Image (tube, rainbow, N blue to C red; front, top):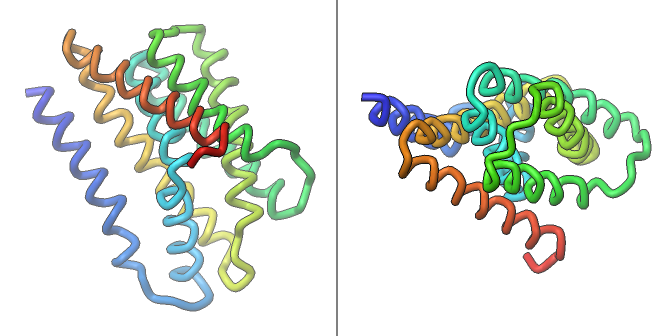
Length: 198
């Protein structure tokens, strides 16, 4: 029963991520153009996808309340990072921080690290600044900034949902291995991003 629910959530989130922007695909300024640009920005960057799915995976691995707190902390702090990027406030090593987020979060999942919830929130929030800053600095000048922000927050939430949906498998021994394996793939992807191989 739970396996069917988890797989249904996973497939629904996945389908939505790759089709929702088509429903809003009218171009130009204002809500539509800004929303679409913001929505697609995280999805089209595999470094963002890896980290955002990892947040959901780690939250599911940790269980309640982390499964809900971490996917809320990340987009909230990310929005502040985006404002910093839009304002041009200098933050060093943005790309390194984004790559490290996948490495660190992947390792947390692989080794089933379960620190106190406040530590988890600090780790996730710290990396969210880098992701948000990247979104903010890449804001197209022709789109509505608010709509753009709404777009990338929504797609970030959906990526977290994909991670949570897959992470529900930790309830079973084989699923726990699969989730930790996914964490290993995310960490490996982060290392690839960090070394600039990809």
